[in-house]
Amino acid sequence: MNILSLIFDQGCLLCGHDDTFSEKYGLCRRCASPLLFHEEKGEKCRVCGLPLISEDGICMRCRNEEYSFNTNHYFWDYEGTAKQVIGLYKFKGQRRIGRFLALVVYRYLRRNGLDNVLLIPAPCSPARLKKAGYNHMEAVCRALKGTHGIPFATVLRRRRGRQLKKLSREERKAELGDKLYIRPRDALKLRALAQGKHVILLDDVFTTGSTASACAGILKQNGCESVDIITFAID
Ligand SMILES: [Zn+2]
Ligand SMILES: [Zn+2]
Image 1 (cartoon, protein in one colour):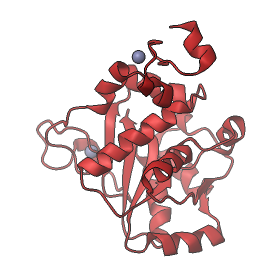
Image 2: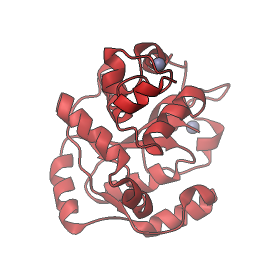
Image 3: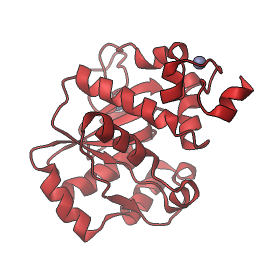
Image 4: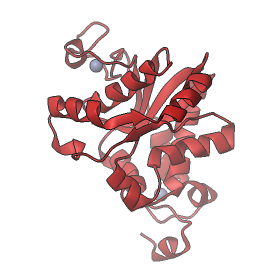
């Protein structure tokens, strides 16, 4: 990595190469292109979005689950460069990557004719919020609003609790049911904004689906007719 690119905050965070794309998005064109032009993966599970092998319409994992959302749309497997890029954004404070993530979402929405969208950023844990000073997914939504006018509503919040990644699927469900909430005035705002909109929750990684499902559940209790999910990667 080119040390100057770190100092001047402009080169590619993966290879150090400096082009106009990396100045804006934190990645040079060459490193970004496999992430921008990810292949469509044939028939997908209509719930989690994973490619189906021999199943019909819905994968084995989702068959036994009840999720409150309709469909998860995701872009990458959570490994290799994709994992590195998400990590740079989430754990290393590389905010330029947020603009790149916004670009990925925008292209996806446009390609799939998803318009009239209201984005809802997934909530951060209070510990992360305090450490980073901002909600990562909200920053992506903000970039999308700034460049393309796509509306968003930061209404989901999380109370202090246990770290989700250390919990089992069942424990996560219970923990989230307890800790997720929408403030009353945000609930009113959400009801108004969600009218006639395609509501999409934006999160970084889809793991068990329990966070997405808990978020979708509470959104539906607050006037959203149905909720889809966009995640950057699936684990
Ligand atoms: Zn690069
Ligand atoms: Zn599935």
